[in-house]
Amino acid sequence: MQIDRPNQVWCADITFIPVKRGFPYLVAIMDWATRKVLSWRLSNTMHADFCVEALEDAIARFGTPEIMNTDQGSQFTGSAWITTLTEAGVRISMDGRGRCMDNIFIERLWRSLKQEAIYLTEITDGFHARRMIRDWIGFYNDKRPHTALERRTPREAYWKGRDQKMAA
Figure 1 (cartoon, rainbow, N blue to C red):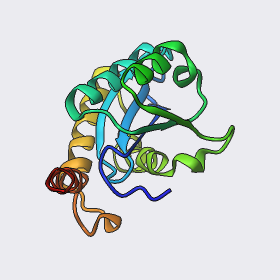
Figure 2: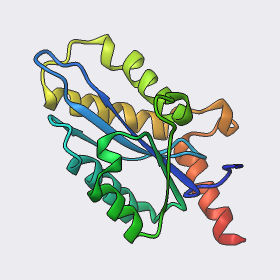
Figure 3: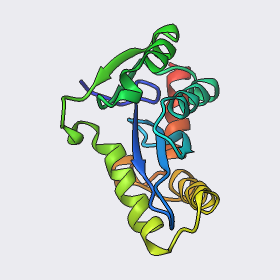
Figure 4: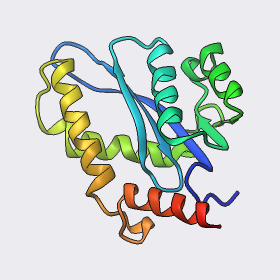
């Protein structure tokens, strides 16, 4: 399937963020075509509610995607997540079990976030982690050009693609 426009396919995933005393969990919702991080949330538990909250925020701010792709984690196979997508009219796609490469763009996001920000300093607590993630995602979306996006930032690629779709 060719994915070439904003809101055609979104993806979501969870990673952990090492802090001095524990591991909060980070979920991100990303537009697959433009790599734009549409929403994210940090939680000290793995309950599905922070994932659903991020999804609802992304839908409220950017509309609905045609397809949402995730792995088969319990947060993404549970009724709250599935109901939110179904009620919004979004088709659900899930990676094969144990196939992290199926969601390569968000896996790459995690690698970049951790290597460029998280691992460079000792994070003292969740508040410090939240500030660091907010600042880095702002940089990633608004200032960091991507070769795959013709040297545009994810923000530029997302809005240019939306404008082109509206004009068609």
